[in-house]
Image (cartoon, rainbow, N blue to C red; front, top):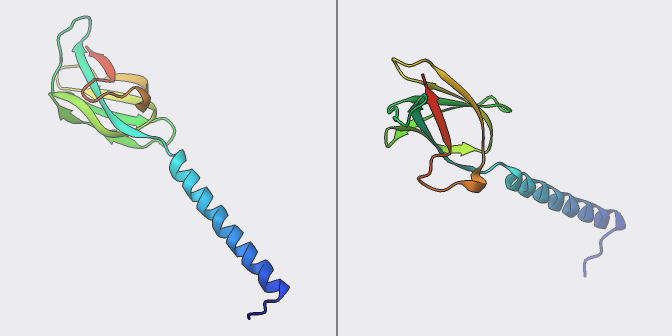
Length: 122
């Protein structure tokens, strides 16, 4: 039989409780992170339905100020893994004026292959 002092039992309870609390806080932080999903931009010539291909896009998160650069998918700007949030999106292509738009990216309504944003270039 092992005899433990009251102080030793209190320390075990304290350390066990602390480990459980740390585990819960860690899990909460992982679950509290924003979702990430893809987002595409359908770019057209202002006032028309004519698509503008090979446009470069850059999205800057309003809160974190992190910059995300697009790749091309079907000749349109595409962000493969963009966290939810508010963004300033800059579009550029030689021969057109730079376009700037403000938008919220929401993964709740995400559907593969559907462009989330529409933008016009001048």
